[in-house]
Image (cartoon, rainbow, N blue to C red; front, side):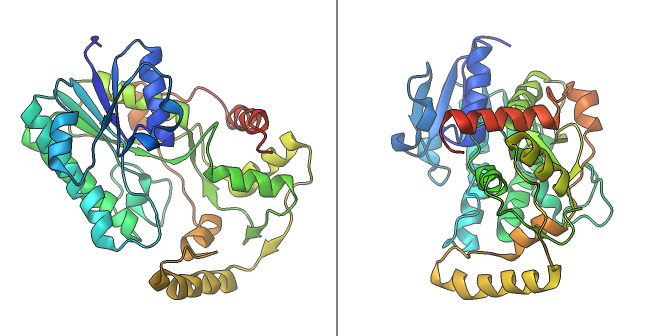
Length: 329
């Protein structure tokens, strides 16, 4: 890859921040796009150009992509309470269109778009692969699927080369979402809904960042979709027991019945969402304990040369080391 500059949208987020660092380690100049400068987080002090832009504002995107060779589109509206589906669609779908149009006008040569395995929704017969039909189950998944479809339309038209990346369940050092799980295990408060046998397929954020770079480098690949996930899917209890083992605490043992918890999650959503309140428990969180998330990754391995760097045990060790160093455990 040349020394031309690459744009990373969502650079202030967890995935975007790791991607920025991966590029910098390779000596690649980066322009980091954030919605506002108070969102730069850990980017402060890095040798990057910061640009403020918003996926709902075409003019700001036009400025952000000027002089850019390639775009990594990571930014998205995740699951934030209080937003109607129209807001999710404007950012996760129409925002993709605006970014592509701005990139084309600026002469950008390639775009790698970040989607999610969530567009597949519930998969009846895992493992799923890139040919599995999409079946999104909520507005985040629906709008991410719409954004992916827009990206694929641009790729297929020949107007902008690139590929779509669908990450598995992202975790890694610094991850705030898995911090709650690790803390609950550490304090003996983690429990299962059901037997803990549901398969989970993680992807280390550091591996994901490398996969994005591989997708940008493999310029012969166009219009493809790649699932990026770790070494293997494991039952949830295997993850929790490994975390407990490394923490030196008792493994989780409490198992709650599925149906009452599903009912409780659905009820909380119905009551809380109209009030703009984040539900304390919701159906999707219950589904985490009961639905298999298992994916084939052979296409990315064969066509992009992607391989996970570490085992699940090593990844958990790195996460725990980071949490301890920051005084979070």
